[in-house]
Amino acid sequence: MAFSILINGSQGRMGIALAEAATAAGVSIAAAIDKDDSAENYVELADVAVDFSHHDATLPLARLCAKFAKPLVIGTTGHTAEERAAILETVKNLPVVWAGNYSVGITLLNHLVEIAATALDASYQIELVEAHHRHKKDAPSGTAEKLLQILRSARNLPPETLRHGRSGLVGERPNTEIGVHSLRGGDVVGDHTVLFAGEGERVELTHRASNRTIFASGAIRAAIWVAQRNLPAGVYGMEDVLGFSK
Image (tube, rainbow, N blue to C red; front, side, top):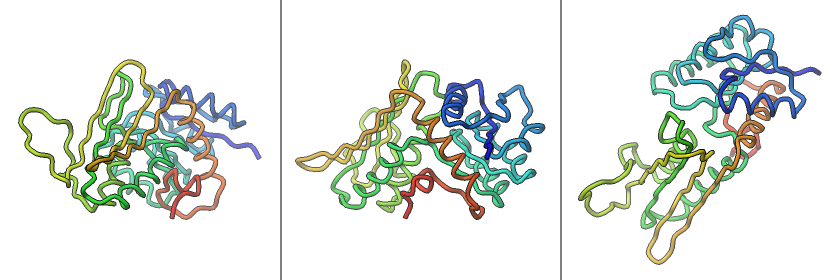
């Protein structure tokens, strides 16, 4: 059976990689649109829409997907809390895959970080370091935000325990703090390290991406998964696509 996708954000780095990954997977592209294009005439033609655009472009696409009852894959990051809430309300009757990172390796990293954060008590202080290319707009990255969510949940910590960088006489580090550091420069595709530092030992979990093919291939895999299953409405993650979910 022929299968087609709509790519929103087709001229960006990920959009170009998505088109290449779709071709490699035998998936046809019903439409490839960008910021100056309208998706309204194309969403109905596709089996699923894939969004790697800008944070303010996701909601209009979500409304069209809701109108035509089309599943949606969201890889765009940097949404405000208000934008995210509006998107979730709009797609409440659709199956949607929404992840900050579509890499198989990152999905495994999320799983391992949860295990480590649960197994290691508060005497192991947590630091997260992420690095991306100089053109990236948001910080921390969507992948880092997901990792922070996992860490806070495992340790039962509120958002105010996050410390974004340090400067000056900040005092002794409390065990409940999670340090967050975003590095930007050059052409770094994406590095993420979670450090658990205890007395006498450190545990470091790291993922490094060397090209965008892994993200694009994962997103195409997610698009096929969400479109070709009779899934109930809801928001799914890459862990669901790969069968890692509990």
